[in-house]
Amino acid sequence: MAVGKIVEVNLSGLNATNESEVQSVIIKMHYNIADLDLNGDGIISAGDLDENNMFIYWLNTTGNWTKLLTNNPTWVIDSGRTRISGGTPGNVWVKVRHLSTFGIAAGLVPEPTDSGSVYNPGGGSNNAAAEEAVAELRVKITPTSK
Ligand SMILES: [Ca+2]
Image 1: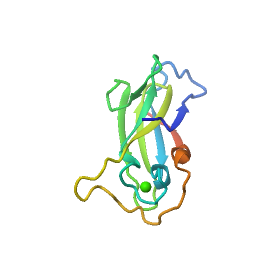
Image 2: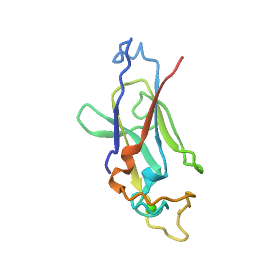
Image 3: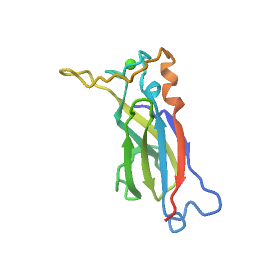
Image 4: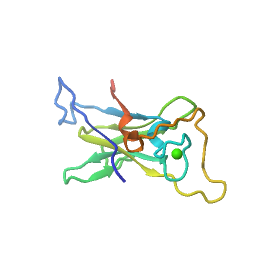
């Protein structure tokens, strides 16, 4: 599993290393069909990236990537995802009390068993830049107000 997009989060104007000054930050990473479609056939199927198995990771102090889940580690207040719907990009997000270097990674869609979980993104694309797909992720950082 490779981390496709890495973002380092810093906030100016306050001490981002001090949890008492940073109530929380939502880190939301957006993706679209082209980001998932590794072989560029316009269909998300076995061997492409699985948006249901996409998570934000944290580069921890020992240099390892740790998957972020709600309350695991404890400074992850909340987390969630919105799947791609029609032409609307999907996203995964975490609400954290800890700023650091974050990345996004996804597992691959498994080989189908019966009818499989293949879905049609509608539209299709011939984008063959498979290795670059995940690099097109947009990152939006939203400071929360409470
Ligand atoms: Ca595909």
